[in-house]
Length: 460
Image 1 (tube, rainbow, N blue to C red):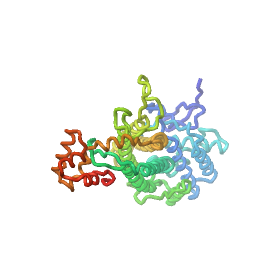
Image 2: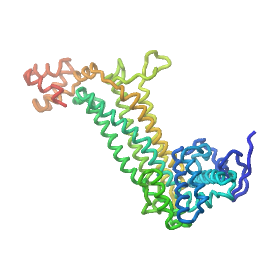
Image 3: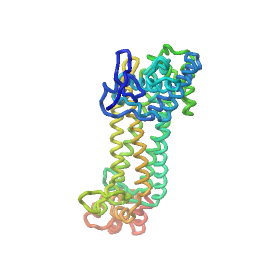
Image 4: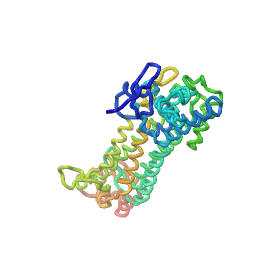
């Protein structure tokens, strides 16, 4: 039978599990928001702990917090940064109040850990108080958007950029490997002029490279932090030097160029950085869906489809059809991309919920942008390792379709004109003769001229 202790807040007493390091306000949130069972991810908790560590350092340096308390808070926050106390962050991601419950979860846990370090017990706020000490010079309204910014940057740098760089590297390898493979091009899913298979992969690489550069550029917007703005951006109750000192400490902890924003009120009112990153992740997902669809189409068959590409077989594809192998990695990537698009839609609506000095929907914005980064990063790694690296070309089928592509007739336009070329194409389809045979039979080109004009190597 679970044991409890009694915790207090401004509304009265609350029963809290005896082993909990959080207090009354966190427990109320647990009871008020039994929504999904999903919590904000560890990288977000790490960012919160960085903020609390930096705030304690700054407040101690400014003489607002005594050194003994400040050191205990910093030591506690460091343990939270390291992931030791993730299990104590129990508030559902779908909470309210701009993330006040999430902020208090951090304040209460760190206060309890710090109190123990000073010889007290968890929940003994006479030693270290979650609001007066841990949350000194702060508000939910400036710490939560700051945590979103920090955790987004960390996730991009530690997860997404390395994953996308790996995909781009292998795409370049395939671009070079397939350079000499000439195949039928297709527009509107109909025959078109020839193209190098390597050129198709150059198109894939180029689209993702553009997104990589765009996200790198947008990431810079996340470095300007409004920490120190407190409740509405004015910096009420904060020492004049607090913001700069705290943000400098965050920069030191992360070894990244975080700085104090020149527009604190804009920072407080909006979640522009996260919204822009999410939008670019959505755009990346659209490009990846296109690549997924292309590779599934080009590998379709193997007996009744295009079958120009051969995908690595990673698992049986059917519970009823023996020998069937499906493009499961590409289907997985497509589903991930669908979710990223959905996440962005959620973020867009939540961002539009900002009113006056604050956006009360920040928790769901943080949840979804970090979710998009996580699943897209994982999806890219799986796609690269289990599909892209082992992708092979079926030269028999690329040659087969190329020889039968009626759009090769396009190369005759400069020699016999569009209308005569159309007549050659029509007659070739009707008679089953090749384009070369037809144009030579009509006497419009010599065999030598036809061979040269219809050489696929000359068309690419």
